[in-house]
Image 1 (cartoon, rainbow, N blue to C red):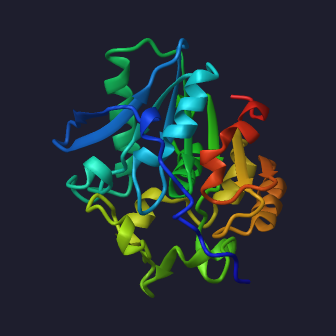
Image 2: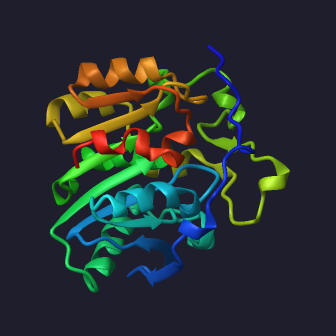
Length: 266
């Protein structure tokens, strides 16, 4: 089933809402970057971005979460993305979990944190689900997966992936970013090894059904990459909360959060 083509030209990053870039050094010696959106709350929300971009495009959603008092929001750049572009490829299959824990330790050195909520969009949403069934899941009070990336074997993608990505035949894919949007800070190729370290396994639904993590899933009814009805079926059968939001697509689900954010209990 083919979907609509993802339209980047109508998606704008409001620079006035973009927090300054900050960095920290991990114990492995890598320098990773993030942005922080403060709130009068002891909750910490770690909000991950998707493929082909970085933390910048999460600024509207991060600002909305912070202004709603849900928590101080941190938007990291996954290694290999944005200002973390030069960070080494994953050292192990648990590299992104290690990076996440290192980030939380760093934030807790300067801020009081009572609860940590893990959230993410697209590839970042897939990482959220990966963590939600992992050994470190109890460090988090809630999980929010927005239009999450799921293993191809679960058949949740439109055949053409909205024109956004193209499989490479070896378990990875490339991002079809239009030339006019290329700035040099993008990661445009994803190897099978990289994806294996950041995405959930093929048994993610069975794990969710078995472990019952506090997962909330949100997907746009007009998503160009994901078949929302298929995700709704899978998550409902697994016993997870999922909301299909009418009128929103893969990008407007994060650029127009007022449509759904108040209906999610974090």
